Each structure stands twice: as C-alpha cells, then as structure tokens.
Length: 164
Image (cartoon, rainbow, N blue to C red):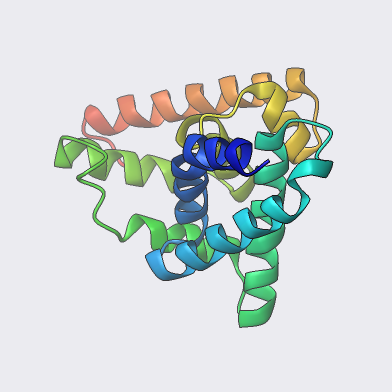
C-alpha cells in the first residue's frame, strides 16, 4: 500500500495544492490543509472504494471547512478575493492578461469560482466534479459553458475599452 499511496501522492499533490491555494489564498494555510488532507487519505487509503482522486478532493473540502471553523472568520468569498492580490505572473505570461483575468474572475459568484477552480486549476473531469459537488454532470457542463461564455463577453467588453 505504501508504494501505491506514494504514486497517488506524487500524481495529485500539485493539483491538490493549486486547488487549496486558490481557495485560501496563502501558502502557509495551503501547506497545512494539504498535509492534513493527505494524512487523512493515507489513513483510509486501503478502504477507499471509489476514485481516490475524488476522495482526496472531498477530503480537501472538509479540511478547508474545518480550518476556517477553527479560525472563526470564514468567508470563502474573502478568501478568493485574497487570491487575486497575489502575484500570479508565474502562471500567466502577460501582466495585462493577468489583470484582465483577475477583473473578469471577480465577476463570478462563489459557486462559479468553485467550478472553474475544480475544472481548470485542479483539472478534474466533470464526472469527478459531479461527485465532489454532488451535482449532475450535465448540469455542471451546462453551467461551465455558461460561465465560459460570461467570461468571454466580459473579456471582449474589457478589451474594447469597456468596464467590467
């Protein structure tokens, strides 16, 4: 089991880290949360019946919730707003694209941000996302399509000199 878990850890660590960092917005909390989640997954690894990746992301959600309960100042939207204050030039090549992306992402609500995070930052499939969020694949695909169209319209409007 140790070899299987080590392979699992190596395969999904980066996805888990990006997912948590996007939600909490700082390195220290991200390190703590990811460590705790992988510890919990390790303790139950031999008992996981479904996809270990989905199990990991559900565990990450639970650990994030526990983390904010302990801090007693939980506001997911504030955590996401903190994310935008970080320097993301390592991820996005052009600074102007980064600024546009930040402005456009701020137009999304909490649920839309969660879906974008899981789909594009954590690279989960719609099937995996449906398990994590307890929603149908079809509804998630439609919601994602609408969000992308909304983002395209905002980017187009902004690139033409308009306000977001």
